[in-house]
Length: 194
Ligand code: AMP
Image 1 (cartoon, helix red, strand yellow):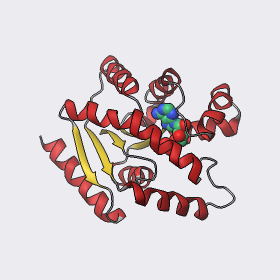
Image 2 (spheres, helix red, strand yellow):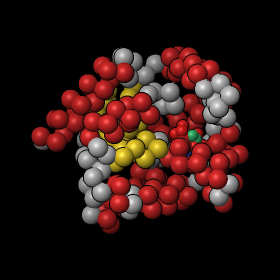
Image 3 (tube, helix red, strand yellow):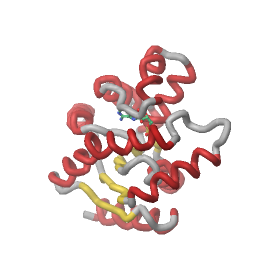
Image 4 (cartoon, helix red, strand yellow):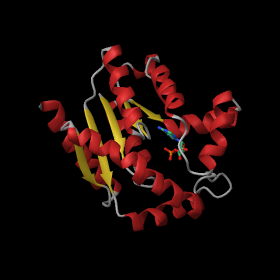
């Protein structure tokens, strides 16, 4: 099963991706986690990405597409994967389409978590407190505002891109983790039975 999870920062993509991993035995490909690992390891990509991430901007498309293209070739992706945080621009979505076609892989679903923006700041502030000490450098009010505006201008069109292809399924992301997870599973059943 190959899925894309879309939604603004704080929508719960990571939490839901972990549920999907446990349930379907597929891997979570979080580009944010990959970049943070690259920053921590001090790789050339990490060195380039750090300042961009800290200010809440997007890492260039070609860097991200290369990372994903390489990653989905790994043996642990053979059973499927959930893309969490990718694609974040229409150019990335188009590149993903082309690279999946080249590799002969099909996408089973694109799920959007819809959330109230007012709730996002609270969630992210909560996340920053929970991980105090090891908090993400980009989990603070100023950077969140920037990440939300980047989401609106660059990533919201990705949802429209998939909606236009009739592939987008929107789930209310404001419920409990269990409710959101049940709604996602319902869509997946419908998608795999179709
Ligand atoms: P995330 O953990 O998904 O919120 O990502 C954290 C940061 O990593 C983002 O604010 C971006 O700076 C960068 N990032 C993650 N995924 C992408 C992507 N697909 N394209 C560009 N930048 C990304």
